[in-house]
Length: 303
Image (cartoon, rainbow, N blue to C red; front, side):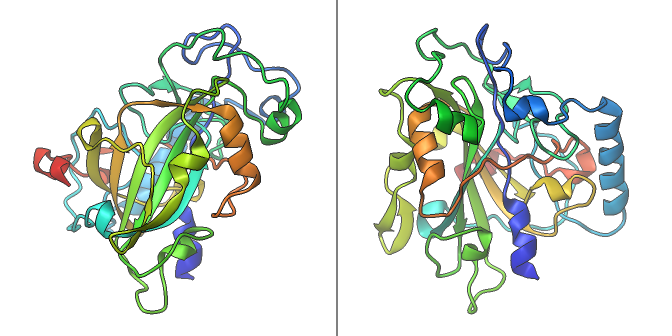
């Protein structure tokens, strides 16, 4: 049961399409999966989901929730929660991708719309600008891009999940626990990327390659920059938590700077990776109610 519930942490990161693109404006190609899905349900539906979430949490004692706007540090949820250790002293247990960013931040604040009301094609997009060359349509991998419904200019949020249990990288978040520790502390290193048609951009395969480092499974080439991040106490996410709170506690370390990743490397990764992740996950609605958010504290930024 717990392993199934842990799957809720599979967060989202969605896409931004572009031909007339300035960061995240512009229209996607016709005939793709994103055109077939019901997008942009009425905003009232999302408001209603937020009301249901607040009602379900009232008087029960749930801890702070995720995702959130990391530029807004206010929060009034005071449920006790101990920060997880730093990621280098934990074991990497899973990496997965979200279509668009689940969090809202300085460089990813372009709202993708309400999506289908179930967490698909919503979230936040890269708010910077890209060159024509970076946005050039794919030629050699056109069919593969259509299969995964991604294109240059799209945004993803990458979650590297760490556990205090003695585990190794594996499939789903069930890999973050073992029979010896069924309630491990979890930390997520989250960073947002924009996909570009440029072989000189970062390679997702290299960024997610893992190995043993000082006795722990770690990413060997992480793009993490502690000085460009926000640490806060929150929860697992996932589209199943739009109308009910998550029961699990997570320490989040969200990196504020968007990195550019070669879209070809993402397509290759989705076809084959150590985590058996072959799709982009949806996103949970941004949590905005202060009583469902922790206060982001200056002293926690050293964590």
